Image (cartoon, rainbow, N blue to C red; front, side, top):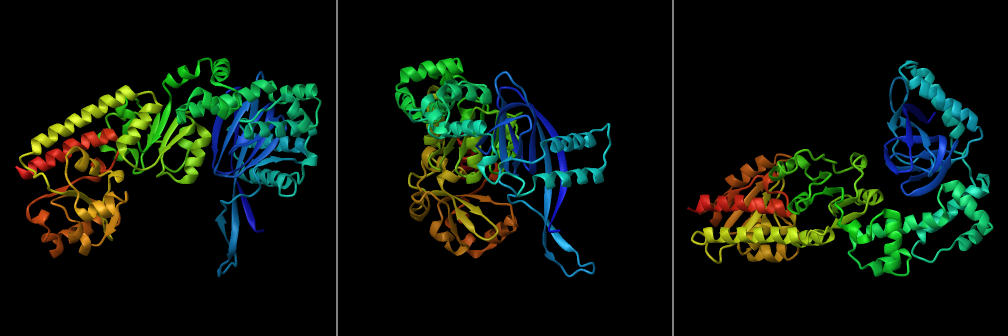
Length: 531
């Protein structure tokens, strides 16, 4: 036997007419116990009703909802697969097994020969997992293996001939509507495409989905309009044409019918927001996020702990922690893994900001969230603070003195740029320092930090050097050796006591609220050393 199977859990999910989401982290059979509705696996849409059986691989997100006027009851049977990795030289001659992670079957519907027997197996598995029935792992595994035998590769439909023609036709129509909503779509066109008389098509569509054809199409288009209203800032006429309507007036009327408010009113309503990395941008606009994350962990945002009290950390590697928050808008940066960003787009409209000038990103976000007044007030406050700091340092720092930020790692040194935080933006924009020529040419103009050796450090050294230490892999020990070296001791900034140690948790973030608070710290460091 090459593969071994282990039962993980069986769980019952119920759904009404609102949409629900669930992250799937194991191989899963989904059996519709009763009701009817729609289920999506990573965007793959399927109609389900009592007796429908589906398979889902791990690392997928499912979305499900009942048809109007109906409920939907689903059983999720999750299991693990262990695959033989070959023979090892053991006395017993046993094979070694490793946990399988790759897809096992295609995601989607299965078409077993004995739906009745599958229903009975699920019922017995559910009873075995209940406290009343106790826990019988051997019986449980036997039932799992029987279920796998009924649903194993080759037992699912190899062609579309096993699917009810009416159900398949409506699924094809739904798929076409989601892919071509920008184009002109009529009931007669879809009826012709699927081989039904228009009136019969309307009856089938209503029976299978619980919605009329026109209502279903309107909801698709309005959902896309919501995304564009939040993400693009385009005019109503432009958005209308992008989602398949003739003009902004018609879009506005349909939008109010479906959503209950006008497009303008929808944009102005406060949104439930989850934010990655740019946490302080939201806080500076007076918005507390529903959930947040940071690439070094939310707890590492030392300067924002008071403002973030009670805000859940949704992590940085999985969308699962945010699903129950049901965000209406997600704000992220391109530092996130591309696969993670793709998953975020499936949960809610997602703004992805690229690295660059933090205040330009801040102003763009403010425009999207209709917080321009709050942004302008914050920027004026920041600029005033910078002006006061320059005045306090005017007699201590010469007009042409240079400054730069450096980070010591276990195997190298880095010269930092503005888009990677560490207070670099403040040095040049708020405090008015000049960068050393090589720092400007090789780091700031490029927009990326530069990795250098200790021997190269004198070429990038500044009159004022701000130093952080990356703690991983004995970074502190490396910093000690750097500062004991002759190269370090000969630097002008070291000899003149113009080196400032900065804590990474305090100085790491590049959001505007952190920058404002870092400015106070940097100013105080300079004043303390130079007086």
